[in-house]
Image (cartoon, rainbow, N blue to C red; front, side, top):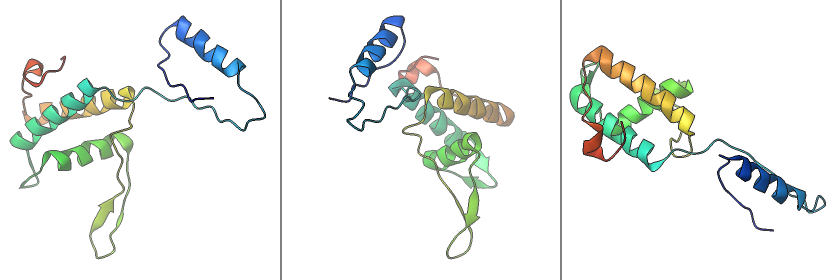
Length: 134
């Protein structure tokens, strides 16, 4: 049996999933998994445009940080990541990939980014400039 993947948004989708599960051979050693829907392309574009705006406007403890640096800072805030001592001194933040995060996770990160920008007077470029919905 193939591994069907589809969003569950309607009652028809739910019934389709039930029908698939009812056909599963229980002796075949199958595993079933349900997860939150992953980020959308629009959320990804919004994230990078917001990161770009912040990196251009905000100094962080006297340093200009890259878009990627800011991504690590904001994702660490949302994920409540840990920092551990590095092999050669300093610290390493145990990272999280944004690639597989849910839409809900991204909404939380956007809230953190918007609050941070507001506290520091950073302004975001208009959403239509980046091809995303506001």
